[in-house]
Image 1 (tube, rainbow, N blue to C red):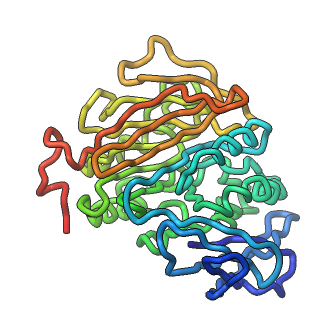
Image 2: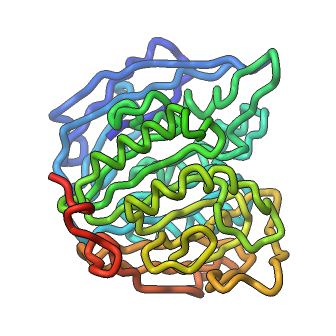
Length: 373
């Protein structure tokens, strides 16, 4: 587990003490410090420390920098069942706070965020306030994120793209053979999850495309029968907002996902919820991935309330409301997905579906092609 925190003093060590009992820190690890400047803004000292190895499905207590508050987190399980909270386009509004409160009531193991985190949009102090906002959840469960368009923050000739995102949200890209924090993969409890970058080169000659090919070749569907892909700009979208913005990436990369028999794809960007059936090349296909747009976390830009009519046959449910998703994977063959609207005092489960794994589908899969190892 990588622990990230920020201090104003460079004299605080990048050390994390931890153990399985409150106040009893029997282990420790040292990490690294980074910082960045953005125009007149200078960040605090950002600490990244990897601790472990850790036992699965266990609560650990930890303290950062040798002093201060004690925190605790639970590691994910090593086998099924496992649960994911999924939400995109969070921002920092009252709706965001409501979304986070509802997620906190869901006993998830990992949170997946398909881009657009803080909506800092060049105002770097908003990255700091976002960290304070999400700390109660992000300090207790792993948050696995990829970038969105609001993370770019490039000013030509003055700043680079993703300066704040890369400094503050360091993901395990090197561990997955990637050379960029903007795309990576990881495995947890029988699930292989690929986080792609919608805003870095994805052409067939790009590093990202070649890395994705290599990553798919390493997937072992015996040990990780579920295969999930996450990125920001949706490939399938019947909302009037952001129409066609994912088309180029889809044309390039969708054949790779189809060949690999990806089970589910989660995207954000469109500030609404939409669930599609299994689809490939804009046609219903029982061997394609199920696409879900979940860009409804609560951002300040509001909801994308206009949908195209008539809606395509492969779009099964759509609604412009703030909310979050819950994915519970029960075993190697079956998972349950539900979307929860935030419009009421309590989250309302509005859409749900059972999902069958493609790696075990006799209709779609030649076992020799699907199973490696």
